[in-house]
Length: 224
Image 1 (cartoon, helix red, strand yellow):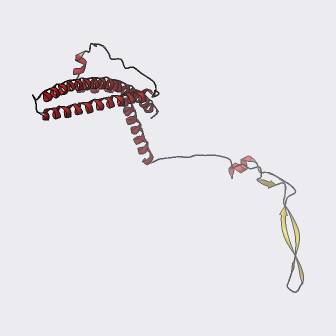
Image 2 (cartoon, rainbow, N blue to C red):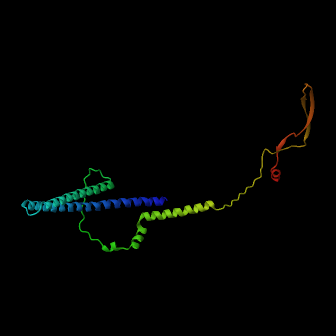
Image 3 (cartoon, rainbow, N blue to C red):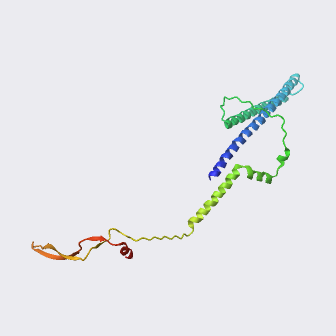
């Protein structure tokens, strides 16, 4: 996924370059449209002046003048639309280049260029294979496909049965496991019980004890 995101950055760079190149070509195209519109408007103006003179002279009907004036208005509109389109193409280029709107730029028209026509006649299969090799978006999709395959394997692993085994050993040795030293001795320990009429009775119980205690040896604790 990380490598795919790197390819996405390369794709974005390519997109920006392509957008800039496209805006440049559109400006060239727009300049030609404006020039053609201006030329057409000039031709229509000459025709309008000529027809106006003929109408004034009585050689043509006035309806011809109305027609050419309508054509002149349409040509003026076409010129305005062409200029608006050219300004829009310039605005796009300014945005792609992150230029201030007050910055003046001059678009240079390229001269005669020798274009190898054979490269433009490549088949769809050749173009597709070339794209697989050089286009970063294709590489990004291949990487994401591999990522999805790993995710699928991960999902299969989550539902597979699992076998686990644990083992441990120890002596359970404790230093608090004590045994008496020597022979046990018996001691009588008195205790008193008082009944409800406040009569006291003394009894004795036997308690067995040793003179001392020591920790039970390891081998005996292990055996136990």
